[in-house]
Length: 281
Length: 241
Image (cartoon, rainbow over all chains, first blue to last red; front, side):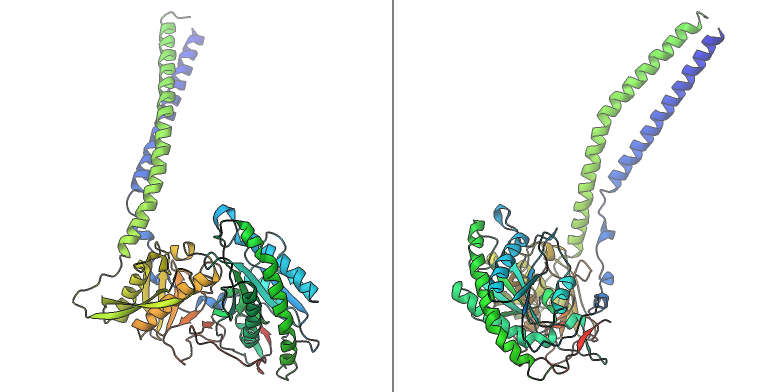
């Protein structure tokens, strides 16, 4: 009898627990439904307000300002070429049909250019060898650490006439020198714009000989990568990832590499002339 | 065992089992419905945000009473994306520089008759536009400007130039242009063109409103700085600031 009474109490206890659990589950579900239905209201509060925007020039002060070695070019002249295969890692750059990715192609073009430049007697440094993505500043720092180097960043566009190549030089950057004789890192390219223009025109000329339809002279653009580079620096952009067959771009690699190597070789004596002109500290 | 209790206990067991079975059936039916509703609600919320944003950023309406002027808008000159060309469009434009800027930029975003010649992605919108007292215009675009634009130096540069050229031709009060993406300053438009600085619109020889340690100013398109083939004598070392 005692056992039966205990059994009855246990059953009642269990029932209360189950009922309680069910009530709790129902309450949670109701709450969830209410929450979901409330989200159907237009969320006007999420609209960006002009007040959240930053006026010009304010946030740029957060730009990293790593130190860099002196700019003086060696009297021996230009020996080092820094090749920058643009993008990499999760940043694939331009993407074309059939899985063509700019980041893969730039590595391929950089490898071809390295071979061609080494044949011309240059020492070549690459900003990346694998599928990583150094920052703009890290890439620039490789060139900025050299005494006499040029910097060439390689790109593949998603527009333009397929089979053509364009060379770009950074847009006008007013040179600024601080009171202590240093120049700001974020305008490192400013003193080199003239040299960059000359290098760009020479490389573009070589490319145009090989790839008909390419421009005759280097273009200007406001390119982030070039701005922090304290060396003659150009961007070479091949058109384009929209080709039907990747082989079309693969076939361009030796020609682009050869043109770059010949352009840099033609630039070498001009660079020496400039560096021995007495303009350097 | 008390015979009176035993049937009662059996009933409890029966009701409990029934309750549990119903609860299980209810859960089996209700949980997928709940998940579906949650998913739909999330989608609706996204749509609602976008809808609200679009409603708030409706292109600035043209006021027919405004004088119709021949506005110059810059789109691609050909389908090879090689250069810009001005297209003259007669529009009723406000005399207020902010409204006028919004009107011409919205028209630029809408694109030309031949949509292949557009410079800005069709889903990009101008979220906000204002002009600071020093003549710096701040244009805040939706993320689509950065995510939908064809990646590349040429396409990004032409996109920016189409804006600066259009403002230059139609709003003389704008001296510089600062481009923001969804209220934020970004390093590049889509991996190439530098957006950390301001772009020259109508500044002429006037110095940009930035101190030497802040963002650089991109030169006016076409106005190349053809420096001699020597390094600046002022060139010293790179600075750590």
